[in-house]
Amino acid sequence: MAVNIPTRRLGGIDFDATVLALGCWAFGGAAWGGQEDADSLAAMQAAAEAGINHFDTAQGYGDGRSERLVGDFLQGRRDVFVATKFFVDEPTTAAALAAVETSRERLRMDCIHLFYIHWPRTGVDLRPVMEGLEQARAAGKIAGIGVSNFSPEQMEQVMQVGRIDAHQFCYNMYWRFAEREVIPFCRQHQIGTVTYSSIAQGILTGKFGPQPSFPEGDHRPGTVLFSPEVYPHLYAATEELKALAAETGRDLVQLVIRWTAEQPGIDSVLVGARNAAQVRDNAGAFDGEVPAEVLARMTAISDEAMSHVPDVGNIFRFYP
Image (tube, rainbow, N blue to C red; front, top):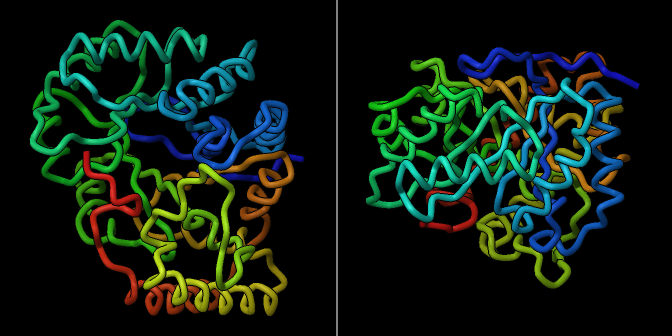
């Protein structure tokens, strides 16, 4: 059953994309401890039925497996806004054009709505890459260009030769460092904003205990949020949020998604899901109103939790 999820346009892309986006990283398998393709396809079907039309994937999710599954689902559909990303191994125009072709083939799309540079490269000039993406845009192979995990200075560099339509960055109740410079820069330059890790690598589901465990191959134990000096504070904050959700009669994840969507300067909230039930639960975030007083109490809990989180650049401690 469809929920009335608001839509927004990202940058100059001519498509009304839902504020809630379906994150398709888990569809790739490995980094999340395994995943069945049937569950991934069911999740996408549930998203479409719930009114979610913004799907986000990447070439690196399962070495193309996620993109191919999204492509399988898309056949015969033109009502889905599709975003994908590529990692810059070779910072050249030719490599960027080749990356676009790789994703078009996997997704089986003539024109991809939004194509991101997945990560910046320290000390590497990415203007040739941006020039390649602008060539792909001019040829009608992509409609919009995005960046992910870029600083304002890195965005300024590629903006010398092209237009950025969207920036995807980590943002959640326990990781709000983008509020300092990144979000204001995007607002100033009419760049759409998309959050990832919106439920803090799953911490904000409230399903983890004081000592979480993960299946082999899961990437999360190495992230900042699950580090032994940080996680106990986030666990305590999550327990407070669970109590608040119970008090208000709302689902915790739905409250968290709604809080994120209500933050100034946020255009789209990307939330992963592994099955249809999770998708339907996430969509419920936009069912009804959440009182301002509840959102304010959530912000206070977030502020306290953030005081224990170090700004190490990104939650993955990944510095390409």
